Each structure stands twice: as structure tokens, then as C-alpha cells.
Image (cartoon, rainbow, N blue to C red; front, side):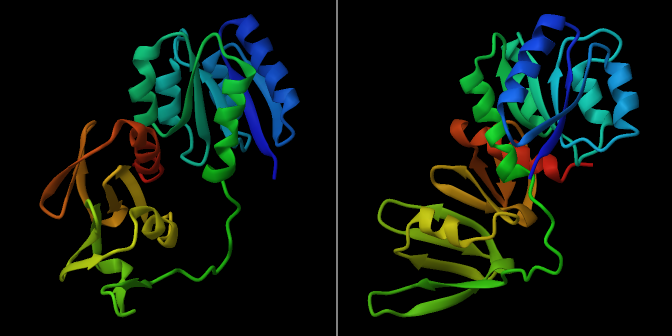
Length: 234
């Protein structure tokens, strides 16, 4: 699958560098480059684009403003010289945030994420409804419906599934549970917590409020979490 992309930056050298990098990546298709955000918006209104390499500091319409206007189906990779915009970029559904000057290695790390974020739609794909977790040392497995899971907590020697109808303790690892859960419904927010996106009540930059609890968002999980939240923003 090739991802259709455009470049939006008011600095010609920055555009040329990204164009050079795009040419090296086989799964990217370059549709055009724009040094004016309003012209880019006009193009986006007429053309389907998978991802924009978008500068933040631009005249007339900033990259942050443009990202709020475009279709939710169009992903954004911000390119800027200002690190202070990083968290704001992630909150706006950014796939990644590239700090200028951009190396090809860092560029490739960012675009590689597109293969996990943008996936072809599969018609009538069956949805997972439950899983079995081992609940004692005698090979007993308990059926758990995914709709009942609020969040999963990793403790020192075991894992606790916090459910709408109680709790279940299992010796399964947090990683094995995460691998068994559908990615469209669950996300890890901390080394000790996996949450159900459907059960989240609210969130801020540091915490998730769910099931009457306040759970911390780990620094290394913040980017992925806010990207997932952005996929469901209105």
C-alpha cells in the first residue's frame, strides 16, 4: 500500500529536503508541495491525501490551525524548529513530530508508523468479544467479555483485570494480555496500566480518569495514547 502525501512548509529548503526523503521511501507517493497553507487547504478539499508533512509556524494559517480543519482521515506529521509544540501536536492527532534539522533516519522512523496507523478497511471483519485468562495454578481459565473490562493493572507478581462486575487476578503478563486484546479498543498508557478506550471518562495531559480512578499517563506512552484519542476526536 502506498500513502499519498503532500508537503506544506513556507521554507523552500525544508520542502526540498522532505521531497528528497520522500523519493527514497517506496511506500510514499508525493502528490505535491505547497509554501502556502491556504493553497494546501484548497488542494486538500479536492484531493484525497493520506498524510501531510506540515510545518507549524506559517503565515496566514498555521500548521496547528490547518490540522484542525482537515479531514480526520488525513494524518499529520509535523515538521518544525520549535520543540515546545510537541505535546500540542500529539493532542491534534499527529502521527509524529519532527524537529528541524531532520535526519533521514528520524524521517523514516516517523513514516514507518503510518503502516500501523493507516490500514485498509476490511469489510465485515469479525470483532473479538472475549478472551480466556488463567485464574489459578490448576489450568483453570475464566472467560472475560471485553465489554466488561475497564482497565488492567500490572502489579508485582500478577495482573488485575478491573471489570464492571468485579475483579479477576491472573498470572498472565501485561504484555501477553495487550497482545491478546483488539488494538482498536485498548491502549497502554503506562508501564502498569492498559485501559479500555470505551470506558474512559475524561483525560488531561497527565492522567486518565476511568472507573472512578485517576491513572497516570507514562511519558513513553503519551504519544501513542494521544494519537489514539485523536482518532476519535470531534
